[in-house]
Length: 362
Image (tube, rainbow, N blue to C red; front, side, top):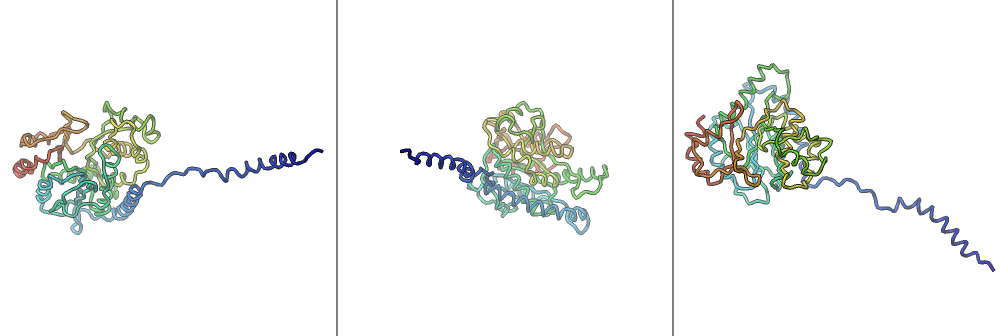
């Protein structure tokens, strides 16, 4: 006798298979969604947003009162980026204390929290920014640290109109008055000569090195992989320059508001030997967004003679002299260098000995 059981099972299976196809999309693993930024980047975004809002809202009234009897003069924000003691703080202290008006500058220090650093005194006391995070050479962390310093300076004082980034190995090679007058006197005169229309940003130029013909550019451009920088940064727009700069307020805001280029430069490198993002991010960003607003050269003299493992020449105590200071001031442009690096900690004593008669005598 014919049994209907196999037929019933087959028919039931036939009906079930289409149902499984209908149900399957609901039981498959969910699609991967972009991960949120890490906590340190979320903190940075919050800081940058606050600085942007505060700066934009306050800048018009500040600029309209600059130079009046009721308003202080514009200031320079000195941004110290360090992962060790500020060995040359006594020399910088002398530099800052020379000017009669103590309200022409502000100091901000980004110190790597993983390093043991002796808290400096005097004008440097309590100048560490709490938002500081770990930094590593030849990594995007140095870009982030510089952006944090800029954001804190923007947020702290609307009269900060210039932002000068230096390291613990940098020294001043002119007096404070010379530096201040050079930055503001020349640019203010240029403002009057060109008769620029009113803007919430005074027409100051940024002093940042921007180089387009370095022989290592292609290797560094492809350090993250072929074509990874596209489409935001084509190779012909990729630039290099010193990581130490003096930016005007307009460009400082541009830096902390940027997301377009940062998302490329923050990517990890595959070729670590060609990875120096801190030397490319700022020159590329400003070259692409406002090349006419930059001088294309830096105010910090760095000697790359006898460079070892990507480090510039390290000056020793035996090299310190008045002749060295005069030589360090010389530049290929019509302007003098204002700062210099890189000095060994042992140079402090001989530098202090010639500070008054040489370094700060312009």
